[in-house]
Image (cartoon, rainbow, N blue to C red; front, top):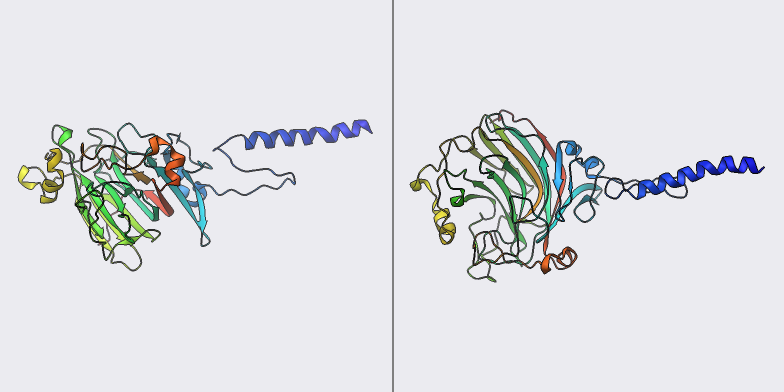
Amino acid sequence: MSIQFSIILRPAVVILCFAFTISSCKNKSKTTITTTDEEDVVTYPSDVIPFMDEWKILCGDGKSFNDLVNIEHDNFFYVENEGNTDWVVYKAPNSGVTSRTSSNTRTELGQKKEWKPDTGGKLTGTLKVKHVSTSGDARVAASYAVVVGQIHGTEGHENEPLKIFYKKFPGHTKGSVFWNYEINTEGDNAKRWDYSTAVWGNDMSVIGDTPTTYPAEPEDGVALGEEFSYEINVYKGVMYLTFKSEGHETKKFTKSLIKTDFAKSADIPQQILSLYSSIGRDGVERENAYAGELQNFKQGAYNQTNGKNPEENIVWHTGSETYNGDIKKQYANGCYTEVWFKEATVGEGTEPLN
């Protein structure tokens, strides 16, 4: 009888050790094996948006993952269910660990594949912004904003031919969706600037007169929690953008990425002269723009707010509260951004239908 008991005990010990091993692998598997041998089902971002195998991620605390299948990271990259719909959540504080090329914190996917504008690519996303930082300086164009999709250069100046923003001032119900084109500067990249185009609401250049006064709320803006979608389609060097949201006019834009509109000083838009005059950014773009340079897509929550002094850069230094980098305090006091995606695709660029 004692022999039979020892035979039965060994598998139980093995199962117990196996359960302990799995539960200790934080962020790689959060499946819990219970005492009744039933598994708690965990939904990962890769279950909601299957293209995760084509991406890596940098999170707002500096944690990075190169394999995103069956991965989540608590408080930064995970799944929430709302209204029987699963959403991938990207959350980033005002101050955390930043990438090599930025002063701002992000929890954002980076496409592993690189491509050139001449060959192209396509990225889509359906999302809602749940929160943007409630602290900042209203005179600073980047305050209260988050970037939810990008094309990012991976060589040369490593500039950004596209950034899609959502921005909402404190006290407003509706915010603005707009997109920026950053010039691929001829010569010194210190002279670079972004030209901003409104989708719904205002473009980036609409700012407050003082640190605590805000412009009028946009009548056609988008509220926090309101769904919208975008399609970025780069085909034979031309970027085709489509934005859709229920109750809003569908908007489409076209921009060449291989032939500049800004080759001469006379081509610099008045928006740029007004917005960037105080920081001396008045460069021109090389004739062939981003032609021949490698790019990739990014998607998620690229927080545009930071704790830097606005007097040093009135366009990008937002003077936001950061609680000395304490992420828990930032989350507790509204000093973060949070973006939810329910659908997204990535692939080759396609010939536009119209």
